[in-house]
Image (cartoon, rainbow, N blue to C red; front, side, top):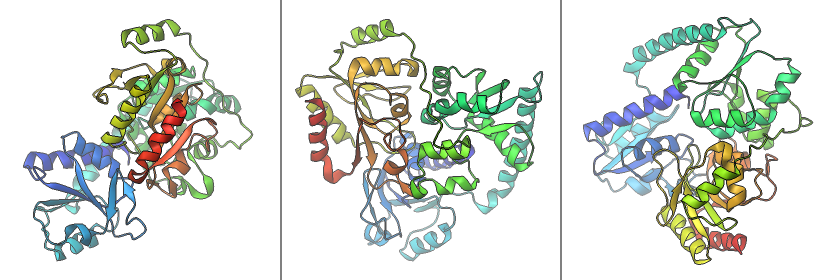
Length: 430
């Protein structure tokens, strides 16, 4: 999903919220897909939760998606229940899905809501394409103004700090190989800029995600010969996005092969470490944390999944009982797990902070990439049945498979192994 698609999704859900269409309803997602997390994130912004996930694909039946069991539509929706609201976001089958639901007695625009672009929105979409093409053209020309024609515009279009970290590992070798001396590096958040600065990447500019999308969209739409490098493992519409996970093509390999054009002989170049021991010591004093015996919980992820609250609370209880201090890594509006302090540390201090803490327990996120070289003991969770294009989340994002970390305990989580998970964490702590 590009940033415009995410923005449209938010607007559609906001309209439903304002209409009261989702109030006191049991919300069902039709389709366990890569879009599920985006829909859930939008609903969470309004204090709403997903009750059920359904899918016609028998291969997904009985698996878990975001902590919920994926079920057949008829299992959940029969007998008819007027309190159900079914949300659909599907590339090619939403008409068949709507027909299936109407045969069960559910009514479009009452129980069934399509989050796809509608036919009557085509004019609006066209205007957006024209407007963003113009904005992209103007923005690119401003970036190139007063610079050499050889200036390269690097664009990191997503907020994932893991993407920037992978870029940084290979960036220096890339600009040397291609003899690039003049460039600008566009990112879409302050956190991404921090990671770029860890690798001493110069001329880093923060832009709105929709603006970077404008430049890329204009570049593709007009088929320009602009000197642009898109730093993502498969931009929307590019064929490479659909082979993610195919025959072992993991996150790192797709970046290596398709973004930078390197083979396996090129080594990673880790970022130089800044001396921030005094600042880290101050954080440990401020939050009454114990050096070498602190567990940092990282329960949030933009792209993948979140651990259930009861599992997180059980982890906190277990760690506390063993005499560890426990904190939750929080940024922005993120809330700490009950019984823990909310701690924020800048990403350029993350490795030093984690070295001092000693223990990391969290879901797979970009922070895991950033701290992959830390000496702390790491427990990282992946959704067991979480699909990511042609592979599982673990197969695509595993730190070990990516060659970033050999000593992390990586666990594919499902609700059936909760006790086993707690035992594994206990073995790491003891």
